[in-house]
Structures are given as structure tokens and as C-alpha cells.
Length: 336
Image (cartoon, rainbow, N blue to C red; front, side, top):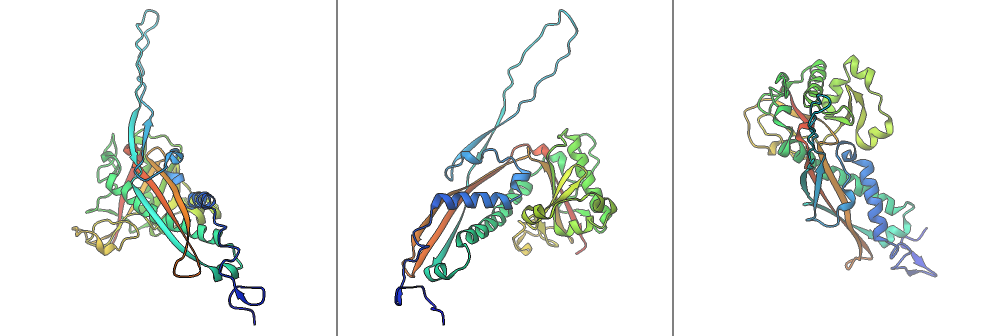
């Protein structure tokens, strides 16, 4: 029978197998960052240009948005030209959120494992970071900060006020596939009325709304997402200039309960006067939100109560709605 414990020579117990001491903090940090960004849809829906500026929780990143240039009339020779000094609008994004993990790597497990433990742990840590961070950030983006007033509610539309995107009290009736498609087209038109560019538009919906949408002929004709991207980030294809994603982490609300983050128990929301189950659909562009995340520290510790190492890591991040006119939300409902 094979030995149960790692042995050296003629049976002595190896309390320090080859795995111990090989942990390289910077290597783990780099792997975790790379794997986190491979899983998260944040790189697709938000501007992540400030990633490299994060060092510690509590840092502040100043985001400068492009100023609007005034266009004047030219009446020909003799026209007095005036020049302006464009001043970019600045928005501060606070790096005020932190998540951590701590795992034990037993010497026996490390010695006997026939798999790459570093890859296994970094892969799972990245997935769990994605779930935890997106759950919090989505709720902050889409509910707490939210879209511009003209981009949500029963009278959405900056120029027409003609689109019903639903409210928490009176959500859009999503009983039929046609209604789902109608809501998406209304969100698209709402962004058009804000003069939002068509490039880099995205839409996030729940699995329930996605399956309704897929029952329409137009969705089946347009969705052409590749399998790999769907597995990694939830991207399923294009529809009416939107890159469409599916997520379980969008805010939701049970009958008579307010919207809560996607992973929260829906019974924890405050009581509202609504008899329907509600879900949120969100659309926007990468200009709407800023996001930055950094695995700021990983370190090994020798376990004082067992033979093995403890590996722990700290991730810090921040998120900010930068242009709320480039963000659009709809609240859809089903019969209770």
C-alpha cells in the first residue's frame, strides 16, 4: 500500500515538502489579477483605465471626463472669433472597498496532490472575487447611484418622456417574450435621446429574462456569442447595438419586498406596496461607470496549529458612476 503521508528516505515524516517556501507573493498577485479580469464583466461594461493607480485601500483616483466644446457660427470674412479654454469635469473615485481570502495548504495535501495547487486556488479565488465584487458593485451602480432621472421610470426619454421602463412599485409586465424585447428597444431609444454613442453599448439581464427573449425570432437571429466568452463573463451576443450579458447578480425583489443585491436573500428587502417579483435590466456604455480593482497584497504564513501553509490575499477596489446619462435601468416584473 502506498504511504499515506509524505516520507523521506526510510519512513521519516517530511514536515517541509517541496511546495513549502515556494510561494511567491507577486506571482500570486499577478495571477489573481489576470484571472479575476478574465472572469469579470467589469472590463466590458466599465472603464478600467485607472487599474494601475491603486496601491492601498483609501486611495482616491481623480477621473477627468472630456469637456464639451462649444460650436459657434461662422459668418465669413470679418467674423470675430472667440476661443474658449475647455475645462474637464473631474470626478473622484474612492478606493473604499476591500475583500480578502485566506486558505490553508496542508503539507500532506501539497505533497500528494497531482494538480497545480496554485492554479487551482487562484482560479477559484478569482471566481469568488468576481461574484463578491460584482454583487456589491452592481447594486451600487444600478440602484444606489443609478441612472439619470430621464433614463429610468415610467416616463423615460430625455426628449420624449415616452418610454415606460418601470418602477419598483409598478414594474414592466414581462409575461411575454415580446414584452422583453419591447423593453430592450425602449432602453436603446432612451440612450439615443441622450446622444449616447452606439459604440461599446452593453445590456445585462437575468437568466429568466434571457430565456424569455430567446423565444423571440429576432433574438434567435441576432445572438451569435461564442461559447468561451459566455462561460467566462456571461456574454451571449449582440442585439440592437447592445452586447448582451446574463448575470444572476443584478438587483432583484420578491413580492412586497424592495430590491436587494443579487446574492442577498430576497426576503431581506424593505416592505413595498408591490405584489410582483421584480428584476432589473441595465444598459449603458463603458463611459457610464469607472471600476478599478487590485490584489494589493498576498502573503504566506506557516500554520501554527498544523503542518502546512496559510495563504491569504487582500483585494481593494472602487467603483463610480461617472456619466449617469449613459446608464439606463428598467424594472421588470412577473406575477407573484
